[in-house]
Length: 136
Image 1 (cartoon, rainbow, N blue to C red):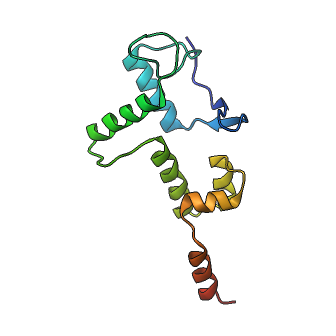
Image 2 (tube, one colour):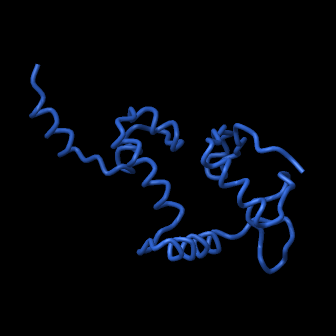
């Protein structure tokens, strides 16, 4: 058994970088609910394991996508939602809330601001429009 920590220590598969991800109270509550419902209390195992093998191996990307589809349908969300959609939506919501693009870049783990701009759909036309309407 274990206790949910304040941070998740994550090794990024794509970039091989180590990152600390803050676990806020909503996520903590969701994890506690999940652990109670599944009977999982050992935090040294993967959160989602294969239904077929029941061994401590992570689910595949395809299975993660399937689960997200099921959960979205269950709560009435339509469309093709995947992990990337959720990630992009989080970045977009941060942008709408006025979070600095440098912080969004850091949260998303992007190497450059230009990557974050593309990710969030910020175009050169949008930047030009802002500059045209900006007066000192």
